[in-house]
Image (cartoon, rainbow, N blue to C red; front, side):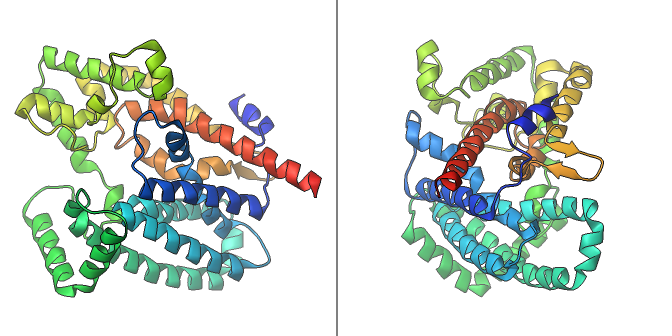
Length: 374
């Protein structure tokens, strides 16, 4: 039924390339504003632009769309990616551009599974594209390492100064080699989150964080678990836009909730660590709140979650269609069950998805009106 509703809303309808680019440019503008402006809670326009940031990944879906001027699209995408990288450096945020790569990889895998005949018949250009993609990936992996090295400075400098410092560090090959060696030593002598040397692929591996929060869940007593429960409720309510939240209560401050669930669990044991935003997998969070009953609760909740996700895929007798709005969020979906605590899925389905669907419909209507006018 949900699939039919999404279909009627036009989410499975084919859209022109120009709409992909328009939505991508809107997203790029939003990323640029985020890089240049410190958006505070209560800034309605700023927060709305933040909500549009996922649209920046729409143009990357054109890689998998049949079209005549494929080379032109690739060249435009390279320029688009370069601007995206600059904005990422200005924020010292690897995720700004690495998420695009992960989306291309995940969507490429889906495309290969459902269009393997097309892949086999176009093997030569695909291999050529993959070769140059690997070169770009290697360059961006080095850049990601540099951004980790520079990260301690992002609280003190920003914008152009941060770009210049990043470039200066990138040119220092000795420093990069020393960093790589230190990472290799860390992974060989201790169990930590640095499983592989590549910092971009390493973002996909969260096993250590899963173990950490599961361990925390065994250390907290009943009173401490209640504190985590109260924080969870407050953080869930705080998902409301600030103006709406202030209409109902003034006792919840989003600024005071700027920490992760893992931060809170660590703080309750050690007395420090709030605000470091340690990764908080849902499993450990659920064990803190419900104990082993969490697995029983999951039996009923997870099928609902999977049904909602599956509704963004439409299967007919001839073809299988994926809503493009779902594809740009495919990495967010991957992270949903590994890094966002139990609050992550609530935010994803109650705020992120409806918000993006609304903007997608608005943009589609704008294009429909434009085509009728001209």
